[in-house]
Length: 199
Ligand code: VGL
Ligand code: ZN
Image (cartoon, rainbow, N blue to C red; front, side, top):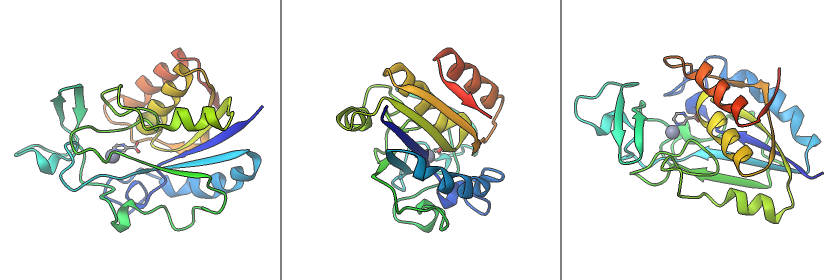
């Protein structure tokens, strides 16, 4: 069976010292590098926002980082500015091994829509094209790792399962933001979607 490793957002801004740092985010780089050789295909995603992105609190007068707003597509967390296109924060962690990357997929480019999932933007309709790519490469099983467990990894895992892929999230190579119970909620949603966990 053809299987793909999908490495979610292992970028400087999600690592210690970054704009939206996930504690121990850099600790997953070595395990991810070690996993890559075991897969037929390796896809890396890169959060890639324009400066005027609607998910940034700085673009909403008076809004605090990590507060909530309502977008046309539903509730949205307002984040500190992060992964701004072509900045050092948007670059992959310098120790992440890019050698075996088959595809680097950028997401979150549309100022008006956030994009946690590697498959669909947060309106849940606009596709990134990843499902078509994986189907064209005959991938049936995907393993997800990266940052953050409770946002981009979880959204991607649920979508992959809903799209009919066999899905495993390897929690040994993921780290979470854990904002207001987000990790518990994400774990439940993944479980309900049929996602398998490795811990
Ligand atoms: C992410 C919040 C905002 C993630 C991306 O990669 O999990 N979280 N943008
Ligand atoms: Zn983002």
